[in-house]
Length: 396
Image (cartoon, rainbow, N blue to C red; front, side):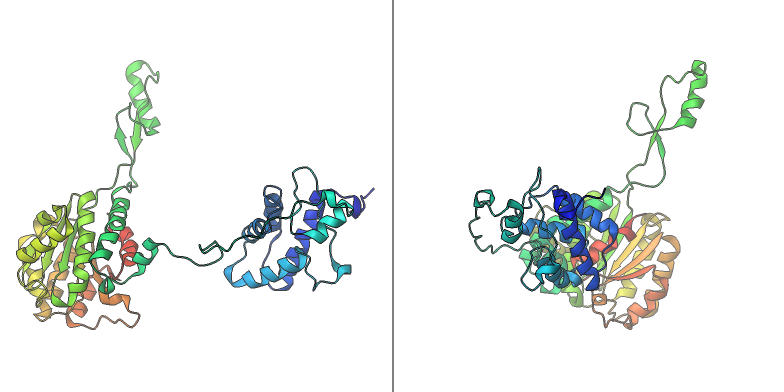
């Protein structure tokens, strides 16, 4: 015999309220699946039902309410769960009952009174009013300092911003240096790793077919090979210090990183990046690099790199990165020819242009247009978020 609704347990009462909430959401056009309702029912028996905010958050999470549907959810929750006055009493579901492991919300007075038979001794004590909280909660947008720094354009940053960004740059670089390769290599049997059955069986022939020790193999950490060519001309002054800080972080974790600065001349600055204090490093770089924040001849500098360093520093496992806005006063034909020769030898060639962060950007500058046919990727480099998106392309 089917049990009457008024004799159902507390779990059934919760399910009735949950079903009405889900139905109201569907009527409002919010997608709620049966599996979402099951997740919500499981969550309700594990939370404090005496806290309406906790109930609301649990339902919003388990029913997978999107931000665009938040207003519909709040209205449906108020009508069907909180028993708001705008719902006809004849249409209201029976209240959830108090039972083992189930607490009736303290602020649901109409629902609790019907369950307790109107005995005031069974009503939970009234909670003190909550004091206003100035801190952002989960429903109100907030942003951490790191999130703000990730999106702040380099041209709007000062030295204090650079100091705050350095730990973020270091973490980005460590992500590059801790990625493991796809290939498996043999290691000592005492090392931790995956068992290599083929090598183990082959080794067992020396012991009469008995597996005395297991051969093992691991995926080694990928060793990135990078060559960075950073434009330090006047048009790049606002970005160069941040891009060089990024190069410095990469150099710390990827020892095979070589860094060059160029404007009217090409200068190898890898050794200068080991200076501990960024301010001291920047001062020494300004002294070591001729015409810092001056003019630029990209073609001549790239041609000098090809003539002096291409064979020694670039091979089929090297990723070459040019950091420049492509604004060139020199021979643009040299840009195209130099990039062609670099691309023929390198594994991958990337060009990071701070101007590419503008949606209106088009690579129409003479130097940029000459280099474009020989690039694997042209990407923006105007904030930390753009550098973060670059990491997968730096892996060999």
